[in-house]
Image (cartoon, rainbow, N blue to C red):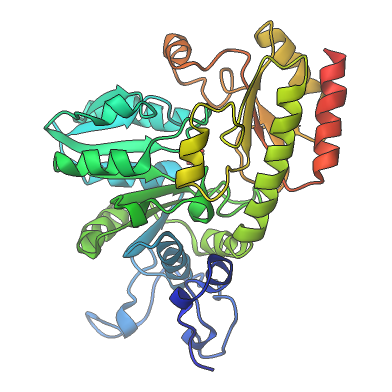
Length: 389
Ligand SMILES: *Cc1c(COP(=O)(O)O)cnc(C)c1O
């Protein structure tokens, strides 16, 4: 069989085949074997076979996942890590003291913590901006080294205008990293618009089954490959072969899962928006979302995350999440099962309360990761829980 050139095919075909060909293995294995070895025998000192020396540096199973993600994001190379945080951390390690990072102010709580409590101690300068506001991209500080955005953002589902922010970064000679965790390459591919880096918490939609923690960094420019690999290897932030296998296994069904996540989330958002006990529903697929038009332009569909608020703040929200039966009360997102959480006391507890209020994360904000169960069951679950409060 000839190796398929997957670039000739649609996303749904590429996602099933990217990163591995049966011809890559002497046995014709359809999935990459889990190369559980820390080291490789050498034929003579300094003469490893096929370049394989040590698994922190080279591992076949990890390479298969890395290549798959690079291919799907349209990047020159991909790197995978123990977690999404390790991917972001490794990117920051390539910067130096005094470098200015301009970041969206509505970021994953852990990213915010890494920036402010660790990276700032090593001399990086962080400046937070409203990434959803087009005016932000009119003039960036001239000494910006890296722009860092998340779109849609976590938890408020604000969109960064991708083309505009990428052009703005490049205009001042900065690089730009886009956290694509919420969208996945199924919904948007920032590298095609010029982004320098795409970040994933592969823990979420990429792996998709809430059974593995991992992260990825995909680069646009081949010239960055050696440096990123050097930092991944030197910092030792690599994921294990087993985790790489699980992540690749999950990735194969990304398109079918995302289609269902998006359809279910739209149905749930429509239901919540029409419900008299819900004061506000946030979903990029609703015409009421302030950036609905931008979402239609830069995304293929609107994703699986929905947020809403109840009048009366935190207590009714707490009662509601405890009354849900199909939605499990848990942090994380992007798995096949539906989850619910309150960002303020949970995922975003590490963001100071005054900052949360400033950016609009109310104490009673409820975040749903809408799974791939039956939409009717999900809506019925929300209906019975809303009836109780
Ligand atoms: C979860 C998450 C992260 C962090 O990833 P981990 O795998 O939990 O380390 C980063 N960005 C976003 C948008 C996330 O949702």
